[in-house]
Length: 94
Image (cartoon, rainbow, N blue to C red; front, side, top):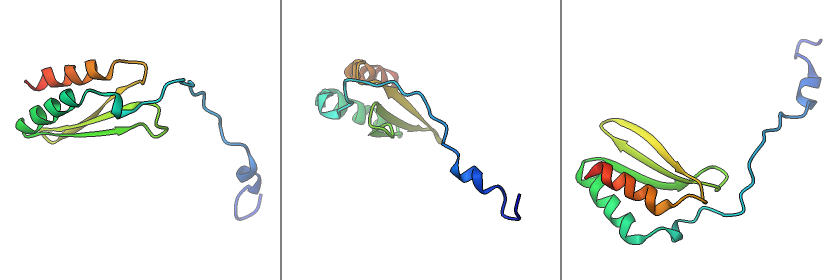
């Protein structure tokens, strides 16, 4: 071993992670605009904030909620009903 460490460590293959392959893709255009509007209004009225996005690989919906100094993310797979998930969030804020 040299002073710089084991140079062969850099040549080792990275660990592979199993990833589920999905045939459907998360797309916010598939969500009901009315429910999105109502969720934004309810969250803002509560003094909280909401963020809409995707997972890093784009395979899932990510809904970030910021309330009372805390934040968390609600995840929804493309095969799940995004409108039902948004409705649950709406009901929790009304």
